[in-house]
Image (cartoon, rainbow, N blue to C red; front, side):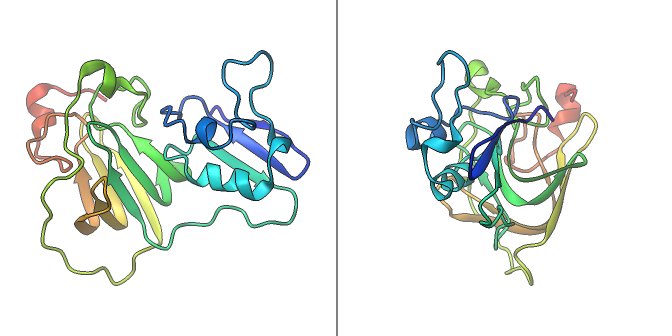
Length: 209
């Protein structure tokens, strides 16, 4: 992890540039705190309240922005419902109590176009290659999960899909439920005909990752 923390009086802000997908929720939500392309430090934790900064961090889909409270406030908690949201023509946006390839995280955007140079994380390559994948695929019949939260393990399979173990709801970009699973395999080569799920196409195309 390449996370850098900028210290403030009531809250420290962490930023990992390799996780950032430039959703711009931070710079648009609180431009007084996040000032890109500025000389010197571009993150200013004391320019807004700790509550405002935590709200911005929670809206960062990639998990690039995190925080450490110093005012006695609560740290970020795992979600009540584990979700992976399908971004239109883009990555898989997870919000869950995750372990991704051995790294703990609550939010992450993982590559599903196959072109990222920072696998399993998205690096924006889907835009460069013109990747297309619906964020609104058809739903599958699925039963309600006995539990909707809890730990989730995300394991990139060598030259293959993302194996996900744990309670997880797969939802569309607009929040429509696609599937409810306790184990699934999600495409990350970009070629499945059953996106977001793996159909074995990684073998046919010689995916490496």
